[in-house]
Image 1 (cartoon, rainbow, N blue to C red):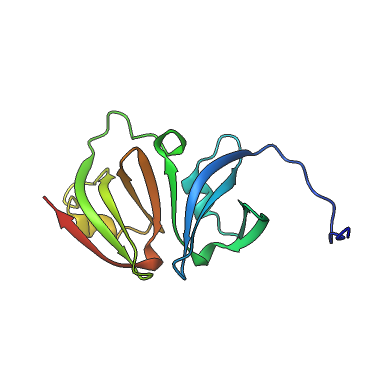
Image 2 (cartoon, rainbow, N blue to C red):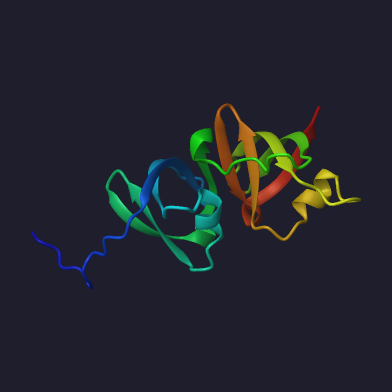
Length: 151
């Protein structure tokens, strides 16, 4: 059976970035994200459009960004550090509302007087970035239940 599409497939240059997606219901899956050249995973997740195309093993799904709790990629696909800027570091475990957790290191460049982890968590960004084990996880703040500092 040949399914008809509502519109022709657009062929725009995109990198297919391997990732693990965790959705708000706790489902985890190996996927590929379409990342435009010159952009990174964080920019794709912060896009204001409500849906993102994700390649699952069964095919492409159009996933509501608001349902994505966490995207984990290998370090090679993550955002580079801020170079010579001073970086705060804190080992932490981020517990998701789904019951899962992400452990690793939070890193951020703090303005004067705002070096605490709490200050970082309360910044206006939509995601926390957790580094560990050769992977980087982008955790949606809307899906975080708690953060425990370690060490």
